[in-house]
Length: 474
Length: 123
Image 1 (cartoon, rainbow over the protein chains, first blue to last red):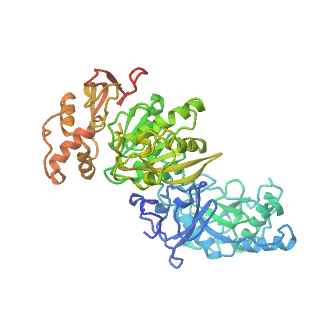
Image 2 (cartoon, rainbow over the protein chains, first blue to last red; image 1 turned 45 degrees about the horizontal axis):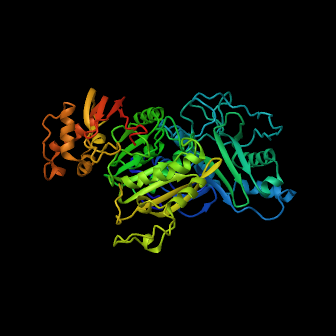
Image 3 (cartoon, rainbow over the protein chains, first blue to last red; image 1 turned 90 degrees about the horizontal axis):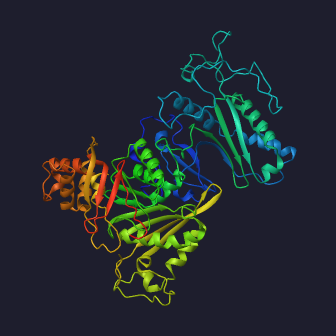
């Protein structure tokens, strides 16, 4: 497998390797890009470039392997990519420029189409269904008319050679190529598409979305002889124009990568859950605890990734645990994820018994009022630190406000503390205002990542438990 | 509740110094077939309190021929690992209770999930 990754455990697991061959003979590795949630780009594959919200990479691995990426949102086959041109985009010359830059890497478009067709007719796999806006294998003949929804028109030239020619009522196709034939219904017909275009910055100022869509759509039709169908196209061409980059891609899969076929009821975004688990240093034989597991999203992502580790989920709410139990059975992970009902402020485990604690801390709602959160959060983290073994890792997902709260509770650190006072000397608790409780001060911050959760942000914090000090920690 | 989980659970009733091991009273036990993964079982064994496991297995009536002492060189002993696998992962207490050996407090097990929540005065 050829995907290069930041950190070996991230990304594709061996179980996801498929047996489909994706080489297109002469084309070699295919170029893809994935969209990523805010802050998750570093967790994704890092081949060459990373533009805000996207990560680009090349690989010869089969699609099934690429589809196994866990911190990505959507996967696209890269068709075109360029820096936006400078200057005013609303002018006439700019229109021509845009039309000319729509299809420049023709081989990528034809290879992309071939790949899509091959995927489409592969035996169905959950989550791997190809991006097909229409449904069903029996296709009515697509009319050459385009819906007049946006008032645009399309030039039709019946004499033009199309890649596939429908043979309905017209005898054998002139340019029929058997290997491109559509095995589903035995007829050949032109591939249909529509353009999904998003723009911001200069491109958005210069053109209306409909205008752009028409411009790009007609350029594609002219160059590749694909036909436009706004309602039920075969393919959707995805164009994203920002001031950073102009990117065109082909979504290959019907469902986003972020969708998990093995999770029934979602809680936290799976991509963020996976990212949290990926920094927890879970090894074979690890015992991992989520003391506020909710419906179990973090545990599910972690357990899917680490096959030989054992996971315990705890929550105070029985109805959440029922949903978690359902999720676990649905994902067929019930031998490795076990559930207990308990409060995070009194975890029913002995001290230093757990290798890692991973927890998405509810942002205020479960705690009740903000005042409750302020009181409960340090107590919760103290318990998590207590059950964590020395050198164990604690990964918390906190809102920005709770992050500040926890920072205060952990107290200022003297250099001796941060470096790990091996002699077990007692730090200056008076200097810290007397608020630092021993188990909390055993936590050393390692890293933090700010990530987007839709409308809000959160921060993934990683801590490591230091060696025992001069105080008891239970 | 599987016995692997039980092996770790501790009572934290206020004042209790050793709330372990919790005594099992099972009213409904289920045995299911779980795929045997010897590496996983080998890795779990060092984390176990062996005598507590033996006691728990006996309490739920599935001790069978599980050795009362941990065998040396168990990593390569497939027959032994299979016995451990059965007791750790295939036996499940669906209904019953866990009793703190020190305080006598009972924690119910319902639909396979033990409820370890403490009341305000016990925490």
